Amino acid sequence: SVPADARVAQPSRTRLDAQMKKRHLLSLLTLLIAVPTTAAAQDNFNVRRGDREAIIANEAKRDRLYNGRFHFAPAVRAGDYIFVSGVVAGAWAGEVLDREGFAESVRAAFRSVEETLVAAGAGWDGVVRMRTFHVFDHELIGIEKVEQFEVIAGVKDEFVPEPFSAWTGVGTTALLPDRGIVEIEMVVYDPQDG
Image (cartoon, rainbow, N blue to C red; front, side, top):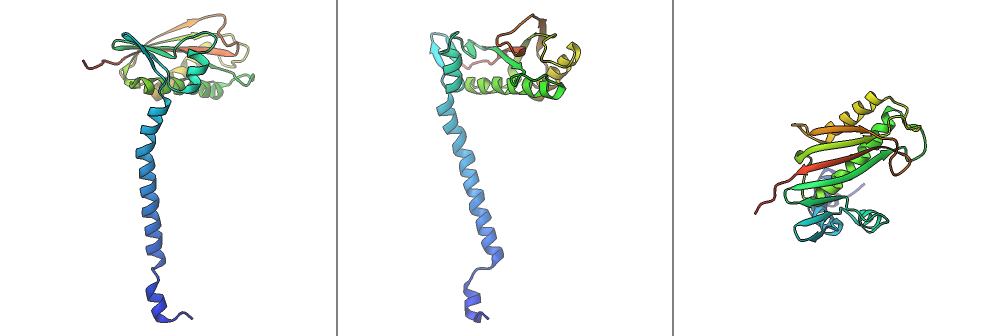
């Protein structure tokens, strides 16, 4: 048995839980406030020359694309427009993609575009044009042409708000890389002040 005066001196279990929750919440809030600023400062590798700016979201894109074998920017800002280079969705594991597998690959491509838009200080609401290049009869896609468009439209609608952009789909015989099934490029209108 615990003496009565010892029980009074100890905080209640409920009070301790409340204090721990409060500390945990404060820690989370601190992280939420600090992380975006830190990430933005570290992950922006944009290159400006004159009135153009190459938009490069992170070090990997800088090394692989901008400084890589073909020397191109993931996007270029020219005035109020951002021209986003094609991002490829494909069957990277070498297995035939069904509807859901294709949708996930297209989502990954849209997430890559989103990283670039963030590095440009822009958002999805500025997308005015989307162009897609399709290898409809690729051996690694298990769905037909119209279903491919349905999947892309569904994923696009998860990211791009109304009013919807213009969209042109073009069939082609191959993409680089070889397992690429569709390449997605965009034009974004993002007016700059001044």
